Image (cartoon, rainbow, N blue to C red; front, top):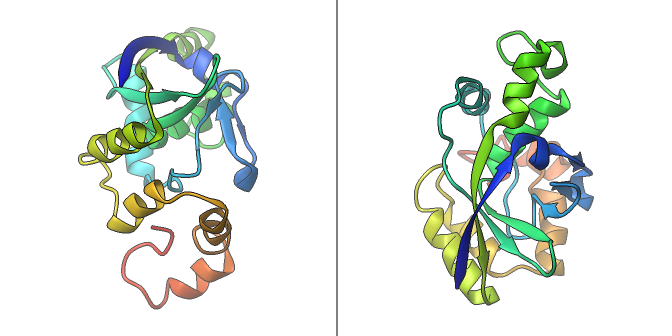
Length: 187
């Protein structure tokens, strides 16, 4: 597998950010599939999400992210979805941090956030190489469950349909199941 480092600013990442729920989530001028079929739902709690924004505001290094190259100038996110969504949602105005929404910040602070550089490794290889790399890089952090690893390996129309009905935060199955399972039913 070929792996190459690419520096991407928050401005570039959030350009064209659009969350169309089941139809997909994109960023990077529509060239980055933020939630490809093998990815799970957003699982960060507010404290984790806020820690990402705090890291960016302080200019501290954020963990490396991994994208997989899908043809000419098109990518899908392999690792870093939770951090990517935290950043995109904040810049999009979906939540506040420190009692301030992004658009309420002074222009110099907004520019500081938008100019923050993310370290992204772009990977090129076969499907099996990419899925194996996905498994390896997800050993740490917000650990994938065995089921999430299986979902990453065995993608397809059946799994996509099952996720639509059982793995969304506000779907009926999730609401019903939450009373009968330990942990999060979307995971």
